[in-house]
Amino acid sequence: MTARGIEIAAFCGVAKDGEMRRSQAGNNFALITLIADSGNQDDQGRDVPAFLKCIAFGDAANVAANLKKGQRAYLEGQLSVGIWKPPDGPPRLDLSVKCSKLEPTQIGKNRPRREKPDARPDPQAPLDRRQPNETFDPVRGDPLDF
Image (cartoon, rainbow, N blue to C red):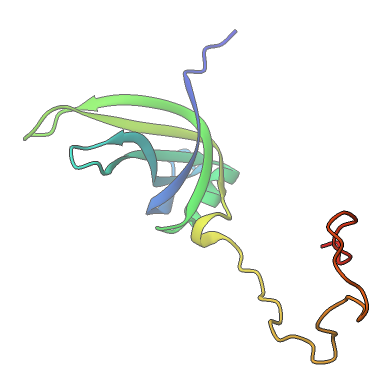
């Protein structure tokens, strides 16, 4: 059995437009930065995001190259964690994902808009389905049967 590392599946927002590149061997790949909810909050109670640097190959690379900042995406892949020390401040985590699956989602502002039904009532439609001599009987129930 082969160890695959840490696997990740997440819905994310696109923090930076995807960028298609070509390796020295001539293979296409894409780089994209995604932002996910880390589940943590800072001292003021604001959510702390997790930034994911993603690399994608093949079909996932084509999808990544077409994603734009502000869109939403679903990703699956292998997570790797690195630590780096900035010149000023404490060490920070670097989260990278090798994407095996990357898809744009139709949630949030990417959701397709439904056409609004015609809100104008039909002037020929009856206002009430009850017959004029019909009454409400609480034992039998409402004859309208909504």
